[in-house]
Image 1 (spheres, rainbow, N blue to C red):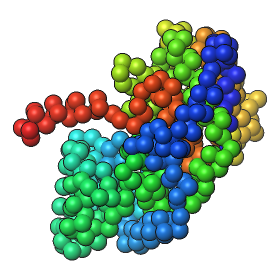
Image 2 (image 1 turned 135 degrees about the horizontal axis):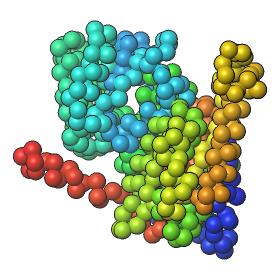
Image 3 (image 1 turned 30 degrees about the vertical axis):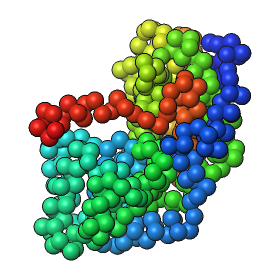
Length: 421
């Protein structure tokens, strides 16, 4: 399961500053419903996951795969980041370009660009497609506009009744505009539990239906989450406690880093999870994600020698899928012939160790999280690990991990600018 190596950061604090006992107490409070009653339902998702939930999602995914060459997932923030992270991590960042029996998956409704929507429409072309509209309320402007566009396309192509059979809704089980629409039109729907916020919803139908449509074993994802709760909770609590100790020492920015491109959208999901959970009341560690070694050629100088307000968390994937080796080529005068025959993975691992040591030497505390591989089981474990660590970290900071009042500020201004108020 997920293992935390925190030795690279311990030298920057006094061990007495850690509060694992307090973190354990807070997590027990979340489990018991004494803390975060309105938003801690995600803790139950892996445990409550059963045959009925699994079967409903798998049957819908099977229908989508059977009648559609493309699936359009409409959502913003937590309504799409987790699903995209799962597909990139478990399948490939190039998923849509692969030869496969599952549909291409396009994510829309996460911006207000007409150009982007037209490009997705062009990519779908004349192929059959379905839509999964994900929103608790059904009134967020970005996905609402995208749904209007793709509902119109479905109706034009399949007629009103045919379109209804290709629309799958994931929303609040009992209230909201999208719930009312789904009930009125007869769309197949899946619930987002009322006590599960968007950024904590990856292991609900929000993430599971698109993942299943991509051919991912969602039973394995949930099994990984349960295994993490049994074996890695102590590491999650240590990580939460240490990042708070570093924050009190003036480390205001956390860089999450990974040396595998498939992790990119997991990093984007992590940014929302921690940013919306901790950034309030004038407090919070600013979350940033960096792709290494790529970003070392743009941000490496600052990380190495810039202002010392940074902490880093390396995500290390211990076993890669690829066994690709560096070929021998005597015609190249690049100084790399000594590496001929080695797996590229060994070079990537050497780079990770070199970067970690350089940043430690430069005064950046480095924490490292070891993930076994890029499987569905590991992804589920990683999601649960970060969600537990995030909730406890925010509570240690004495902020509510489950609200996001500041998100509404730009929305109010936007609606006013458009004359919708």
